Length: 325
Length: 259
Image 1: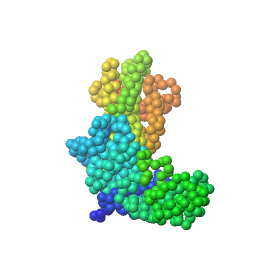
Image 2 (image 1 turned 180 degrees about the vertical axis):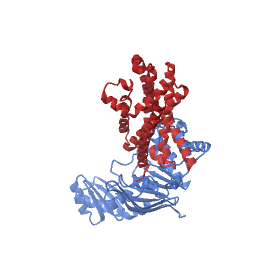
Image 3 (image 1 turned 90 degrees about the vertical axis):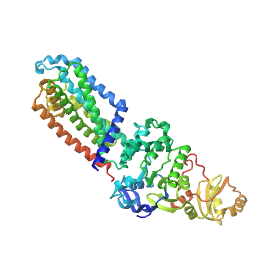
Image 4 (image 1 turned 30 degrees about the vertical axis):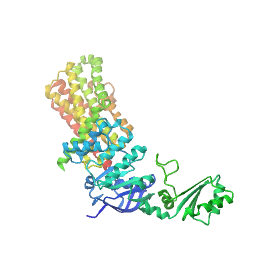
């Protein structure tokens, strides 16, 4: 067997009405690797997960998961993978313990083994106190944790997590992050995670593919991706747009690239730290001192911006509690 | 694979049964409406059984099948509702992601509806007996009543599942259960066929499958063992079950398909 947990070749998924959700993507995930699909809503992340987890058939191309073809052998794949979809999948009329027990039984555990496994997982996700309450009464964070534990029941070697922290507060998000990290590092599980949060991909993943409008636009480790931007990023804010435009002309000799949005000027500069004082003096001399100024190494958002021409995270729409560097 | 299928079906049925009985708002109103029919119609209408067309039958025995059939429809209609809930809360996908038999996933709620129906029917029969019902065909007659209720309920479960999986919408599948009213009331619900006034209602009652279920149940409750009404009822059940179950399987196949 190859040492690849997932091999995807020229995968295409078209929905009714000729909606191309995935346009010809190819990638591989090694065994034990933590791989993230980063992209905005509607980029094709969930569709990719649904194809890889046997919920949807591909329109063309092939996907092999754990050595089995998704179209030819879906039942073998289902035994090997754990999946937490974007929307939690739980029956609110059962208790947490009952759901875990049932899940284990459906994967072929005997009654006593299922009982043991349910208890183990309840302890793992810190839900023993609420284990015998109906899931309908759980909070959003508890549901997420239970949903995650449901996909671990049969000790899968490959985990698919579709935006596992969307809508969670920082406390629950960190709990899930820790959990996923442990699964990857301690138990060697291969992880395929999708996220629209830069921070999440940056913090967790060994390797990232950026997906936009059904296509993979960049792949690599977080460091490699940031290096493709190659420069420092200087963000300048002015009183008005005219000042920002004038500043752009004045600073032309230093910059490799720029973006202008209203009063904000973003510059891509080699060795920004060295030239910054000189640039500020020049702006002062022209009578257009910036209101604020920020020098930063590139982030994944800059990578995204460079390859797609758009920001991934709108300002004010960032994940709660994430402090951007 | 075969023993897996049995275990899967058992697990899925058990889970749906727990869900039904844990949610009294599903179970209680249905049984109350059925008993309400029995008690109120008996109290208000039993005098008309003195009319010769009733041939001396007790009105209680005549109206009991209405109570049982309405309970059967309500109970088995829950199967579709519970599948729609699974679709809406994502549990359906969670189940599809397990190696569970696809048939078992759809069959579970149907069988759970059958269990609910069985308990209700027995309960209504017991209340009837407590009210003074005497079953002409004896204990065997009671079994026949339960079997006919189950057969009719299965047909209705098929209908509700087909409707639910086709619309995938709680409101729509709720609306689908309104077929209950024509089924129960456009028939020999309150009086025998000969006493129905309007010609259109006579005609509709002839093509309404419920009429033959009423006839079958009434024959064992009132007259004892007769071949024809039982045969007719059995035939009607086979016919409508094959239609609704086929329809349900087609929608189910589509709901679990991956295209």
